[in-house]
Length: 432
Image 1 (cartoon, rainbow, N blue to C red):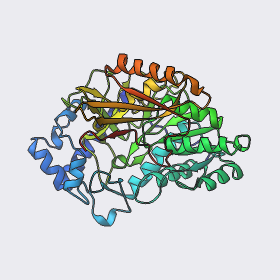
Image 2 (tube, rainbow, N blue to C red):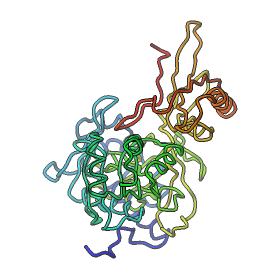
Image 3 (cartoon, one colour):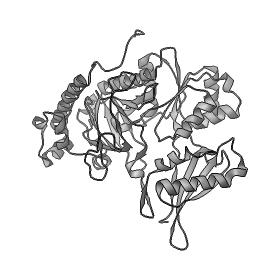
Image 4 (cartoon, helix red, strand yellow):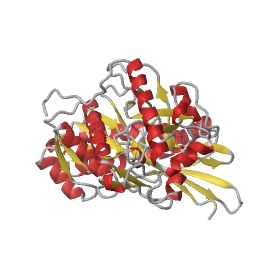
C-alpha cells in the first residue's frame, strides 16, 4: 500500500453521491427480494418489489425492520447468500434476549475494513501511528473491526483488548501508543489510572477514539486533561451495520461523517415513524447499499441523533449527523415527563464543581410517590465544603430545564464505579 492511498468516496459532489446511493438501493432491494424468504414476505405484505424503486423517495414504500426480526428468525433471519459464502459470524451482546447474529461474506469483511480505515483517515492517522485497542474481541464485532481498520490503513495495531489495566499502562508507555480506541468508560478509567500512577509524562497518546456508549462533554474534557491528547473522537456503529466504524467526526469536530456510499440514513420520529424536519432529532434508520450476507432495509437502530445540513468545513463530501445522544428505548417517564439520560448529561457538563460521572436512581417511596435522585460526583479539584451549593445548582437546573424535581446527592471524586465496558446510568426500582 502506498502512502497516498485514500479510502474516501470515489465521488466529488452530492449529486454523484446521490446517484451512487440510488444504484445501491436498487441492488439491495433486488438482492433481498430474490434471496431472502423473510424480506420477500415483508415486501409482499407491503405490496412493494424491486421494480418499484425508481427514486430516493421510494425508500418510504419499503417496510421497516427492527431487532424483533432478528429474534424471530434466529439464528440467520436475514441471510441472503448460501452458508458456503459466509466467512465470519458476529453477534450482539444479547442483553435483552437471544443474540442478534450477523453473517459476513469476504466482500462484507473487506468493505468494513475499508470503512474503518476511512474513519482513521478522517482522524488524520498515518502509517506511523500505533493504535492501542482496548475493546472486546470474540463474537462481539468491536475488537476485530478496530484492528482490521488499523491494518488496512497500514498503521500498527496493539490489540490488548479490554481489562488488564496493568498491561494497558505498560503497553501505552513501553510501546509508545499514539492512539487509544476504547469505550468511553474504559478510556476514562485508563485516563484516571495514568494520572494516579504518575505516568502522564511517559505517555505519547495524541488521540482517543471512543464509542459503544453515549459520552458527555465533561467526560471528553476530562480525558483531554488527564491524557494530554489533542483530539477525542466519537465512533458510532452497531453489529447489524457491520460493527463499529459507521462514521467518525473529523478533526474539526463539527459532526460525525457517515459512510453515505455504504448506507442510507433516515431520521424518523420514533413515535410516528415519519421523517423529522431537517436538523430535528429523531431515530436513526439505516438501509445498507452493498452488504451481501445480511443486508439491512430500513432498520430501526433505536439510536437518536439529528442530521447536520451542509458540507463540513473540512470539504468532505460525506454528510454528517450529530453524535448519538440517546437511544429511543432509553427514555424513561418520571411523573409524566419523558426524560432521556442525555438531558442530565448536558446539565452535569454545565455545573461548576461537577465531575463527569453520575447516576440516576428512580425509586418509589412508602407514600407511593416517585422520587428521582441524581448521584453526582464532585470534580477532583472541587471543594467538598461547596457540595451544598453544587447540589442546589444542579437541582435548580433540572427543575428549570427538565421540569421535574430531583434530589441531588453529591459524592466524592472516584466514588461511583468505573467500568471497562459500558457505564450504567439509570437504576429504576419503582416497580420492584
